[in-house]
Length: 139
Image 1 (tube, rainbow, N blue to C red):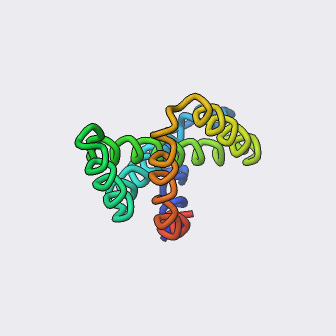
Image 2 (cartoon, one colour):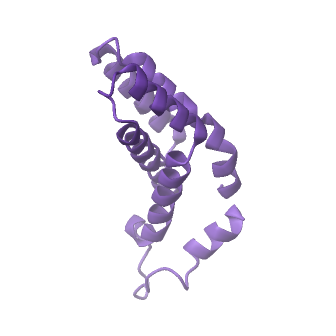
């Protein structure tokens, strides 16, 4: 299924027409990015473990943390990450650059965040590991 979708979204008939001798630009693949964002956001917002974590966070915080807003924040982050990964594939850039940058960003955010929120942040991110099989089907 993933191979068929990738073939359809990147076929020459689906992409914008090119002038003679012109090369494809990364922005020509905008449908790939839109699809990646949509699939990342929708699979994350519907993830049962994230729903459970966000409800528990809302309960423990006494209503300070809105469960829906937490789910939306995590879904937007996941959608951005999957879109960035799609862009990386289109550009042909090495994966290790992005992994290293992500680890540095997480370390900096962890050091600058209030201690009380760090476990919730890691739990919210870890709850997404169950959607990986679905996303791998699309790869």
